[in-house]
Amino acid sequence: MPIPLVVSDASVLLKRVLPSDDEPDADKALLLRSAIVEEAVRVLAPGLWFYEVGNTIARRFPAHAPAWLSALLNFGLEVSPPSQPWLTKALELTTRYQVSFYDAAYHALALVHDGLFVTADRRYADRVTEPGSVVVLRAWSPPHRRSR
Image (tube, rainbow, N blue to C red):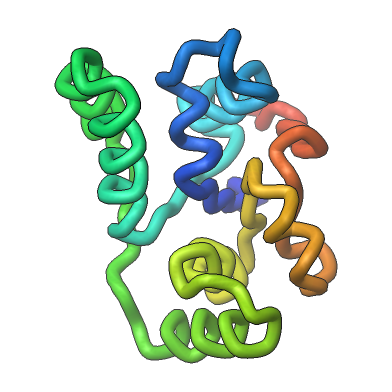
C-alpha cells in the first residue's frame, strides 16, 4: 500500500517553529510532522515554501530566524520542481477560484500527484471546491500506521 502524499503550505509549515501559544492548531502541525518522520505520510512542497516561510519568520522573529529556518531546511522536505501539468493546474485554480497563484501552487501540486493539500488557511479551503483534495489543518487526521 503506497504512503499517502501530503502537500502542506507555508501556513502549516510555520506552525512547526512559531511559538505554539500564538499558533492555533500547532498541535496538529506537530502531529503532521510526526507522521512524516514515522513515514506514515510522504510530504512534497513547491520550491516557494522556503521563501514564504522565510519571509514571515525573518520579519516577525528576526532573532530566531537563523535557527528556525535552518531547522526547517534541515528537515529535508522533498521539493517538486515546476512542471507543465502543475503549471496548468495552478493557473486553472487561480482563475477558476480567484485565489493567489502562491496558494494555488501548493494545491495544484497535491492534485497533480494525487495527494492531499493540508492548509491552515480556512479562507482558501472554503473558496475552492475540489472535493477531497484539500483539508484544513484542524480537520486533518493522520493515517493509520503502516505495518513494517
